[in-house]
Image 1: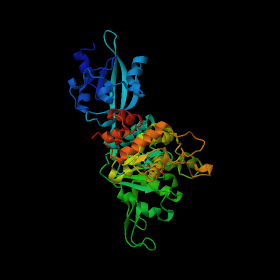
Image 2 (image 1 turned 120 degrees about the vertical axis):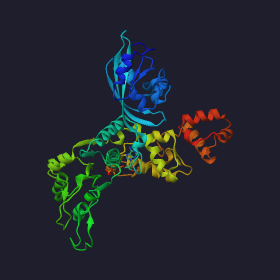
Image 3 (image 1 turned 45 degrees about the vertical axis):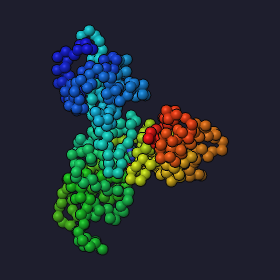
Image 4 (image 1 turned 90 degrees about the horizontal axis):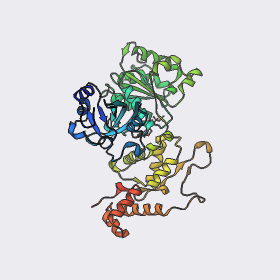
Amino acid sequence: MSKDKISVEVQSLIDAQDHPFVLIDENYNIVAANIAYKQAYSVETQDILGHKCHQVSHRSDVPCHMNGEDCPHKAVFETRAPHQVLHIHYDTNAQPEHVRIKGSPIYGLDGSLFLGEAVFPLAHSEDLDCEQQRLSGQSRAFLECIEHLTRAAATSAPVLIFGESGVGKDLAAEYIHRRSDRNGHSFTMVDCSAISESVFESELFGHERGAFTGCIGRRYGMFEQADGGTLFFNEIGDLPQSLQGRLLRAMETGQFRRVGGRELLSANARIICATSKNLRHRVANNEFRADLYYRIAGILCEIPPLRNRREDIPELAEALLQRMGPENTAAYHLTNEAIQVLKTHEYPGNVRELRNILLRATALSTNGIITPAEIYLDVPIESGYAETTHPIANPDGPEPSIKGLESQYIAELLAEHQGKRAKVAQILGISERTLYRKLKQYGLQSIGRSA
Ligand SMILES: Nc1ncnc2c1ncn2[C@@H]1O[C@H](COP(=O)(O)OP(=O)(O)OP(=O)(O)O)[C@@H](O)[C@H]1O
């Protein structure tokens, strides 16, 4: 095997792989791609051969380790051992795709080393769309989580999603449903913390006319509604003990009776549960039935807290702000300094807390630009004195920097002049090119337009 010419044997060997597979030389050049790769990404051999892997997959002029990413090329060439990573690649339409990459050392007859990359696609960006919100994030912890959820979606086993309050468990459950073969059927949520014990049974299994005082007609329960689809029990740890046995029976047999009814009904619902409590502790304290726990804990998926994936904050904040503007337009923008402030916080309330901080900031912003001045971070409830802190209101804190004032001034001018860069550059007495450099430096590129 030489860098320039791949032998028929090598090509037929890689073509035999089911997964997209590429061979890359020591200089990051793609030297071969298999049929599955060309089919998956709708490319012809000449479109990619001789091109740099980082340009093709990351649209980047530099290798991904130079962008701070875990790079299989670097790892395999340094260690000569296989190396797996989770990455976001860009397909031929420049759409992000979550992939698992398995990099392996491949040796030519002359002993030269190549990287063999097997690509396992996980999710395209539109796969991450839920009804209200796209699941956003690119940290390693988040990508691992998406991989677990994607694997869970491919089976029909019960799933238990756990994680602190506000991490995105509801979204994760919806994602599993949408990626499963039940997509197109109903996704029914039962919020176990919001339904009172007295009505739980009829909510779940329905009731017949006259089953109890004040009950007028027949009602179909959530189990019946979820037939063919997914039944999602949010905060399953709050399910009243009196109902745990009934639920277990219904899950095991798929059969149940409406309250006040005799007929044995059946429904085929896939069960997903979520909890922010430690269910194993509850089992140990006899607050949750062990047999129900083992029934629901088929596949465990943990959603990591936001403080363990701070790299996700800029993308998440942008996605959350997008939803706050009129008709989902990008009406609000965060300055780089505001993003830095957001990244310092601990977020005991996770993504929900980030959303609330941003909501407050949008209310305070007069021009659509959010600077540290509009960001009020919640003080942990345990500390019990003030409700919020203002990062730049601290009298002992540093004076606002010249750069901070400049970025704020530029942002305000752009907002005032409908983003027209030429006009703003003229007011500032600088060239448009210099203005562009400053916009890049302050993370404000998205708010200006050249015309
Ligand atoms: N990865 C994410 N991308 C975009 N939005 C997210 C993400 N994770 C959470 N959110 C948003 O954060 C908020 C809280 O999410 P969600 O209700 O799913 O959390 P939860 O873990 O189910 O909370 P709880 O335990 O209180 O039910 C929602 O507005 C949701 O849209």
